Image 1: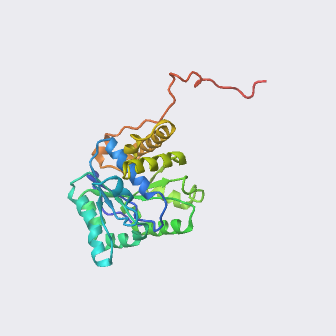
Image 2: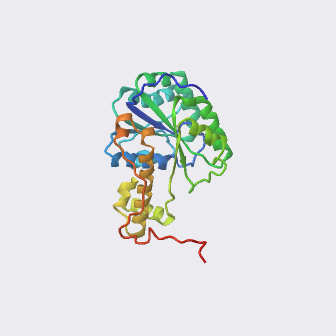
Image 3: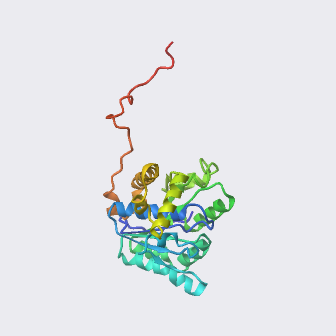
Length: 279
């Protein structure tokens, strides 16, 4: 892997991007939606960009997210640089970008030819690349090729999404070991029940627009509401655990993480055990 440029100890701005895999339907948009909800939960200011002009999943649910359209190689690079200019300005602590999968090589080309890594290091900006290990040849191939280009010039967060793809080929693989040795962390997006997905779709039809996950909670009830609450809570706990890869240094220090442990109150059997060797 490439050596990273000189990096300041303190990170002032985080730029979170899924830029390595030219494969769709891996859960990129859902991860960005969850991250936006998590940042709002902690009161952290962020700006967003939606480069997926085929779906606009991000901007439909967050109207303040800026829609960028890549139509050709001449104007397209300027559109991508809008994201980096905002990050380099230090105007907001976190930038989130949702991209069309097929743009990954083009974005990497733009980053390299405009020396974004060097400029980012000079401004204490650090890019976190979201990677999605999946048992899919095209996905894994493009991931490895992308990592060979970015090396340790970025941080990595591996997002496992068992509801979409298994990751058996990734578990224990040289790819996983390489990522972890480079300081990567892993999270797992919990599955959302199909009935909950349908309930969210009905809520969106009822109100006439797409809803963020927290906004959808206001329309759900009973099992669907409980399932979405669990989905968000479980995801947020994992984001808390890897906050140093998602936030500037100062903001990351403010995030406390505690492993969910069963409380004694209301669970009287937590200390009960059995010796299977007893006759």
